[in-house]
Length: 251
Image 1 (tube, rainbow, N blue to C red):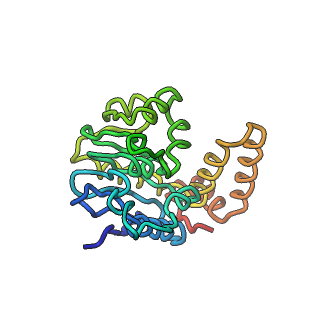
Image 2 (spheres, rainbow, N blue to C red; image 1 turned 120 degrees about the vertical axis):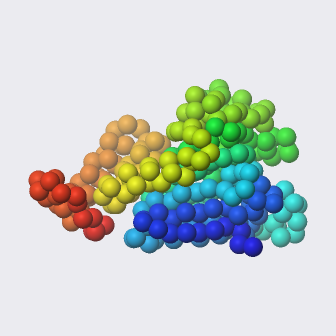
Protein backbone atom coordinates (compact mmCIF):
# COMPACT_ATOMS: atom_id res chain seq x y z
CA UNK A 1 0.00 0.00 0.00
CA UNK A 2 1.30 3.45 -0.90
CA UNK A 3 2.31 5.42 2.19
CA UNK A 4 1.03 8.65 0.68
CA UNK A 5 -1.49 9.29 -2.08
CA UNK A 6 -0.83 12.22 -4.42
CA UNK A 7 -3.44 13.68 -6.76
CA UNK A 8 -3.19 16.79 -8.93
CA UNK A 9 -6.03 18.83 -10.40
CA UNK A 10 -6.82 22.47 -11.18
CA UNK A 11 -3.48 23.75 -9.90
CA UNK A 12 -3.75 21.88 -6.57
CA UNK A 13 -1.61 18.99 -5.39
CA UNK A 14 -3.42 16.86 -2.81
CA UNK A 15 -1.06 14.93 -0.54
CA UNK A 16 -2.77 12.42 1.75
CA UNK A 17 -0.84 10.41 4.33
CA UNK A 18 -2.01 6.83 3.87
CA UNK A 19 -1.04 4.77 6.91
CA UNK A 20 -4.43 4.51 8.64
CA UNK A 21 -3.44 1.33 10.48
CA UNK A 22 -1.05 3.42 12.61
CA UNK A 23 -3.09 6.63 12.48
CA UNK A 24 -0.71 8.02 9.84
CA UNK A 25 2.40 7.81 11.98
CA UNK A 26 5.29 8.58 9.65
CA UNK A 27 8.39 6.50 9.10
CA UNK A 28 11.38 7.64 7.06
CA UNK A 29 9.91 6.52 3.75
CA UNK A 30 6.71 8.46 4.46
CA UNK A 31 8.53 11.63 5.43
CA UNK A 32 10.65 11.45 2.28
CA UNK A 33 7.63 10.76 0.06
CA UNK A 34 5.90 13.87 1.42
CA UNK A 35 9.09 15.87 0.84
CA UNK A 36 9.12 14.62 -2.77
CA UNK A 37 5.53 15.85 -3.21
CA UNK A 38 6.48 19.31 -1.92
CA UNK A 39 9.45 19.32 -4.32
CA UNK A 40 6.91 18.68 -7.07
CA UNK A 41 4.74 21.56 -5.86
CA UNK A 42 7.69 23.94 -5.82
CA UNK A 43 9.09 22.97 -9.21
CA UNK A 44 5.95 22.43 -11.32
CA UNK A 45 4.67 25.76 -12.68
CA UNK A 46 1.21 24.24 -13.15
CA UNK A 47 0.88 23.60 -9.41
CA UNK A 48 -0.11 26.55 -7.25
CA UNK A 49 -1.25 25.23 -3.87
CA UNK A 50 -0.74 22.08 -1.79
CA UNK A 51 -3.33 20.49 0.49
CA UNK A 52 -2.04 18.04 3.12
CA UNK A 53 -4.44 15.60 4.76
CA UNK A 54 -4.54 12.18 6.41
CA UNK A 55 -6.61 9.11 5.66
CA UNK A 56 -8.61 7.19 8.25
CA UNK A 57 -9.19 8.46 11.80
CA UNK A 58 -6.28 10.87 12.05
CA UNK A 59 -4.41 13.64 10.33
CA UNK A 60 -1.09 12.38 11.70
CA UNK A 61 0.02 11.26 15.16
CA UNK A 62 3.66 12.05 14.42
CA UNK A 63 6.70 9.84 13.98
CA UNK A 64 6.26 6.06 14.05
CA UNK A 65 7.87 5.06 17.36
CA UNK A 66 8.49 1.47 16.20
CA UNK A 67 10.41 2.83 13.22
CA UNK A 68 12.46 5.18 15.43
CA UNK A 69 13.58 2.20 17.52
CA UNK A 70 14.44 0.09 14.47
CA UNK A 71 17.82 -0.12 12.67
CA UNK A 72 16.13 1.47 9.62
CA UNK A 73 16.06 4.81 11.44
CA UNK A 74 19.81 4.92 12.02
CA UNK A 75 21.43 7.65 9.96
CA UNK A 76 18.09 8.90 8.62
CA UNK A 77 18.46 12.32 7.01
CA UNK A 78 15.25 14.29 7.38
CA UNK A 79 14.31 16.19 4.22
CA UNK A 80 10.71 17.06 4.98
CA UNK A 81 10.96 19.89 7.48
CA UNK A 82 13.79 21.73 5.69
CA UNK A 83 11.75 21.42 2.48
CA UNK A 84 8.66 22.91 4.12
CA UNK A 85 10.78 25.74 5.48
CA UNK A 86 11.86 26.81 2.00
CA UNK A 87 8.63 26.32 0.04
CA UNK A 88 7.55 29.49 -1.74
CA UNK A 89 4.11 28.14 -2.64
CA UNK A 90 1.29 27.91 -0.09
CA UNK A 91 0.25 24.73 1.70
CA UNK A 92 -3.07 24.20 3.47
CA UNK A 93 -3.37 21.55 6.19
CA UNK A 94 -6.73 19.75 6.31
CA UNK A 95 -6.78 18.42 9.86
CA UNK A 96 -9.11 15.89 11.49
CA UNK A 97 -8.83 13.60 14.47
CA UNK A 98 -5.39 13.27 15.99
CA UNK A 99 -2.79 15.93 15.13
CA UNK A 100 0.16 15.33 17.41
CA UNK A 101 3.94 15.50 17.47
CA UNK A 102 5.37 15.37 13.99
CA UNK A 103 1.86 15.64 12.60
CA UNK A 104 1.38 18.96 14.37
CA UNK A 105 4.80 20.05 13.14
CA UNK A 106 3.71 19.37 9.57
CA UNK A 107 0.54 21.37 10.22
CA UNK A 108 2.64 24.22 11.65
CA UNK A 109 4.76 24.08 8.51
CA UNK A 110 1.66 24.77 6.43
CA UNK A 111 0.52 28.33 5.77
CA UNK A 112 -3.16 27.84 6.58
CA UNK A 113 -4.80 25.25 8.86
CA UNK A 114 -8.40 24.10 8.62
CA UNK A 115 -9.67 21.83 11.39
CA UNK A 116 -12.68 19.62 11.94
CA UNK A 117 -14.53 20.20 15.18
CA UNK A 118 -13.42 16.81 16.57
CA UNK A 119 -9.68 17.36 16.05
CA UNK A 120 -7.21 17.70 18.90
CA UNK A 121 -3.62 18.91 19.07
CA UNK A 122 -0.53 18.39 21.17
CA UNK A 123 3.17 17.67 21.53
CA UNK A 124 3.79 14.53 23.59
CA UNK A 125 7.54 14.31 23.02
CA UNK A 126 8.42 15.37 26.57
CA UNK A 127 6.73 12.19 27.85
CA UNK A 128 9.09 10.13 25.69
CA UNK A 129 12.18 11.98 26.87
CA UNK A 130 12.42 13.96 23.63
CA UNK A 131 11.71 17.44 22.39
CA UNK A 132 9.99 18.15 19.06
CA UNK A 133 12.55 17.73 16.29
CA UNK A 134 10.63 19.13 13.31
CA UNK A 135 10.84 22.81 14.33
CA UNK A 136 7.90 22.58 16.75
CA UNK A 137 9.74 24.47 19.50
CA UNK A 138 10.34 27.29 17.02
CA UNK A 139 7.12 27.45 15.05
CA UNK A 140 4.56 27.06 17.85
CA UNK A 141 5.69 30.11 19.91
CA UNK A 142 5.70 32.17 16.72
CA UNK A 143 2.06 31.31 16.08
CA UNK A 144 0.32 31.31 19.47
CA UNK A 145 0.99 33.19 22.74
CA UNK A 146 4.27 32.16 24.35
CA UNK A 147 2.76 31.00 27.63
CA UNK A 148 0.26 28.74 25.88
CA UNK A 149 2.98 27.33 23.64
CA UNK A 150 5.23 26.58 26.59
CA UNK A 151 2.42 24.89 28.51
CA UNK A 152 1.69 22.58 25.59
CA UNK A 153 5.37 21.79 25.08
CA UNK A 154 6.26 21.32 28.77
CA UNK A 155 3.25 19.19 29.74
CA UNK A 156 2.68 17.12 26.62
CA UNK A 157 -1.01 17.95 27.02
CA UNK A 158 -3.60 18.33 24.28
CA UNK A 159 -6.14 20.93 23.27
CA UNK A 160 -9.33 20.57 21.26
CA UNK A 161 -10.29 22.33 18.06
CA UNK A 162 -12.19 25.10 19.84
CA UNK A 163 -9.16 25.99 21.95
CA UNK A 164 -6.85 25.71 18.93
CA UNK A 165 -9.04 28.24 17.11
CA UNK A 166 -9.15 30.56 20.12
CA UNK A 167 -5.34 30.56 20.31
CA UNK A 168 -4.92 31.14 16.59
CA UNK A 169 -3.41 27.72 15.93
CA UNK A 170 -6.02 27.01 13.24
CA UNK A 171 -7.75 29.39 10.84
CA UNK A 172 -11.12 27.66 10.60
CA UNK A 173 -13.11 24.95 12.38
CA UNK A 174 -15.68 23.12 10.26
CA UNK A 175 -17.81 19.99 10.28
CA UNK A 176 -16.08 16.86 9.00
CA UNK A 177 -17.94 16.85 5.70
CA UNK A 178 -16.86 20.43 5.03
CA UNK A 179 -13.14 19.95 5.66
CA UNK A 180 -11.92 19.35 2.12
CA UNK A 181 -14.48 21.69 0.47
CA UNK A 182 -13.29 24.50 2.74
CA UNK A 183 -9.62 23.82 1.95
CA UNK A 184 -10.35 23.68 -1.78
CA UNK A 185 -12.33 26.91 -1.56
CA UNK A 186 -9.36 28.67 0.03
CA UNK A 187 -7.01 27.16 -2.56
CA UNK A 188 -9.26 28.37 -5.40
CA UNK A 189 -9.19 31.90 -3.99
CA UNK A 190 -5.39 31.80 -3.80
CA UNK A 191 -5.18 30.59 -7.41
CA UNK A 192 -7.11 33.65 -8.58
CA UNK A 193 -4.08 35.76 -7.68
CA UNK A 194 -0.92 36.03 -9.74
CA UNK A 195 1.34 33.03 -9.02
CA UNK A 196 4.57 34.99 -8.73
CA UNK A 197 2.88 37.56 -6.49
CA UNK A 198 1.70 34.82 -4.12
CA UNK A 199 5.20 33.36 -3.99
CA UNK A 200 6.86 36.72 -3.34
CA UNK A 201 4.19 37.46 -0.74
CA UNK A 202 5.16 34.32 1.14
CA UNK A 203 8.86 35.13 0.90
CA UNK A 204 8.30 38.67 2.19
CA UNK A 205 6.14 37.54 5.11
CA UNK A 206 8.07 34.45 6.21
CA UNK A 207 11.55 35.92 5.89
CA UNK A 208 10.39 39.26 7.23
CA UNK A 209 9.18 37.68 10.47
CA UNK A 210 12.78 37.11 11.52
CA UNK A 211 14.03 40.56 10.48
CA UNK A 212 14.03 43.92 12.22
CA UNK A 213 11.31 46.12 10.74
CA UNK A 214 13.60 48.30 8.57
CA UNK A 215 15.18 45.20 7.02
CA UNK A 216 11.77 43.62 6.48
CA UNK A 217 10.55 46.78 4.76
CA UNK A 218 13.54 46.63 2.42
CA UNK A 219 12.74 43.02 1.59
CA UNK A 220 9.13 43.95 0.84
CA UNK A 221 10.29 46.77 -1.44
CA UNK A 222 12.65 44.44 -3.30
CA UNK A 223 9.84 41.94 -3.87
CA UNK A 224 7.49 44.71 -4.99
CA UNK A 225 10.01 46.17 -7.45
CA UNK A 226 10.81 42.71 -8.83
CA UNK A 227 7.12 41.98 -9.45
CA UNK A 228 6.64 45.27 -11.31
CA UNK A 229 8.99 43.97 -14.00
CA UNK A 230 6.99 40.77 -14.63
CA UNK A 231 4.60 40.12 -17.49
CA UNK A 232 1.92 39.14 -14.99
CA UNK A 233 2.10 42.57 -13.36
CA UNK A 234 1.35 44.21 -16.69
CA UNK A 235 -1.38 41.67 -17.43
CA UNK A 236 -3.04 42.30 -14.07
CA UNK A 237 -3.29 46.05 -14.72
CA UNK A 238 -4.52 45.49 -18.28
CA UNK A 239 -7.15 42.95 -17.23
CA UNK A 240 -8.39 45.33 -14.52
CA UNK A 241 -8.78 48.16 -17.03
CA UNK A 242 -10.53 45.85 -19.49
CA UNK A 243 -12.79 44.43 -16.76
CA UNK A 244 -11.87 40.80 -17.40
CA UNK A 245 -10.18 37.99 -15.55
CA UNK A 246 -6.38 38.07 -15.91
CA UNK A 247 -4.53 35.32 -17.76
CA UNK A 248 -1.56 34.54 -15.55
CA UNK A 249 1.60 33.08 -17.10
CA UNK A 250 3.93 33.06 -14.08
CA UNK A 251 6.36 35.25 -16.05
